[in-house]
Image 1: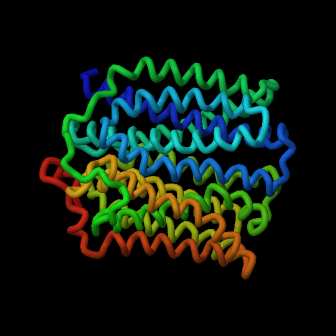
Image 2: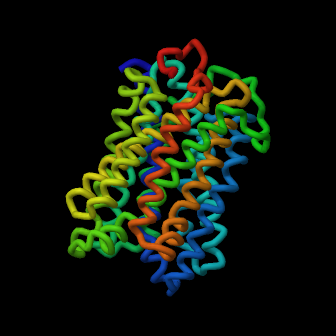
Length: 389
């Protein structure tokens, strides 16, 4: 294995560790709710503090990586992120849990921007698209973390001990990978100010990512409800749609890079939008178990490429450093993740859940149209021309 391959393996392990930590927290949310005797509404309010921290972390991450380099931010942020997880389980009251969740969300996005910046640098060195495979590892870690969480719950391991075990695993990964996490070779001349207005490239990519994240958030939060209330499945099959979606999204990310290298990134994004539309339309038009499952599979494959390819294109902005460009796109897309699930609920309240999913399906067409108009704005430097549209 050559040095670049070793670096890719180490960086992939870091993406896996971040996904593992997040999934471990998500697996124990019911235990946290029971510990503090929270109602559904109180739990929903408490959970808002994590995305609040994520939002606060976006400009901070862009500035820090631009100022100090992704390696330094990753090495400090990774240990801090791993150590914050047990603090969630150890928090003795809701008042102390709230700032911990804000910190956890903030550090999560610091890791998101810094790791993707590091991945873009490696992508340039290797001369081929590899970013989606890292996102695939993050998604895979979600399955592993959920499985470990279920096992810990089954053998009655308390959340705080569970999180301490995950922290130990994380430390092992970080220490093993740290010598392959390098300072970027290319010093960007782009702007370090995150608050400036995005240029046409970043705005277009941001809107595509916004629509992709809106669909993703809806599938995360509403797929089970859709199978329960619209498909009317047996309770044992309620999670079938979610599993189909997650499995397709995770596996799709491992093949996105090869497909993009052959057919261009813009072409893959265009097809992804069509898959999202067709998948949701199929689930709405034919609300049966098998057609909806197939539809959710198509949506998963469609969403798989949106964020990795959006990041890959945005990271080559000529006006901003990679970290700041990623932070700008992430900020725009993040609102899609926040607005999507409540929008589903609001539309379902006025009409019904099928209508909600039908309207969200239109976002797939939006992705295709946005990536089809004036494709030259997606062109990236000659050095990586083979990956350009």
